[in-house]
Length: 455
Ligand code: SAM
Image (cartoon, rainbow, N blue to C red; front, side, top):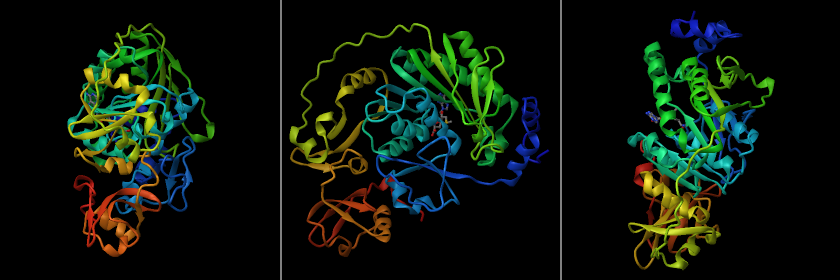
């Protein structure tokens, strides 16, 4: 028996058919760390790391041979990839299998911070969908906003609302992902504190919390909509038992997901309803512990009245957006304070409905501050995949890029080709942010909140 894994957990896992406790213990004792990234194909189509291996269930996912210092890679800051645990990337395979890849749906990621699965949904659902990324814990919403801004798509709304709030949007979403807070046993290899904090009492507490989250929000899913439920726990009480509970309490059906048997993912069935679940064990897959299941709502869901809203003049001069944003006719724009936002035109009405109910932290992309005469372009715009490609820009070296990301003063020699005025700083053809080129100096506009401080 491993000298650090909780006995109560391993004993219970042993009761599961085919569970290999020796291999499970061994992989935890070895403590190998697996590093994987998922690329943002809207920004970059190739991986810039060497000797990578593909994650079998996610075509944008790659294993790296070791863990680089991501903070020192400008492309990390520019949202060209997200460092994500490989098992979690299985959500991409699910979207493909249920036919939601590149769809035009309304999706909710209910427990979204720091944004791993939200950035995945943003990539795989495509530009025609609307994605609401919600995080109930206020202090965790900023990192979620930062990660979504870096990812660069405008069809997103980041909210900071309690799950129960979503019951005020009944029958609204076509897809709800609930990556529930859990006892975290799947992360034992990665974080010692999850081992220290693990107890059967906590498993019970988490399972009650998971039911509460589901009970309070499940009505937001439309009939025939999909619920993806996941945890990073091995405990049946937080996984298969939750599926049984949903199937008993609500009108859902379980959706099987076809697998390649070489992947090592274990298909399990719940006790009462034989619902399909997918277990990831670190001794069987190259990834951490994870559980995921797909359910489809099969009962009628009364919805809310979608009143047409009146749209008042928004105060944004029409030429401003088209000066900075490509294909600007696809977007509606609005002022929030003195900032101009863009948002997909086709979801303009939706934003009003969401505003009436949810606490919105970010809607679409903030393209800049309007002074009344000119737009001071925002960092969000520099990160956006919708920014015009012919704006003034300067390609820089790695050293200059890191100086910029540390918000240090910049050498005029690195910007000799640049005209006076706003200029994008580019590294390997990817935008990092803005500088203002002046006759004798370069002003660095990288936001201080996200600058590199410790390296
Ligand atoms: N989906 C995220 C990702 O892939 O990056 C990880 C989510 S993490 C497993 C669970 C999230 O649930 C955390 O962000 C946590 O703050 C949030 N959470 C904690 N308690 C919650 C509650 N009572 N209701 C809803 N969410 C909660």
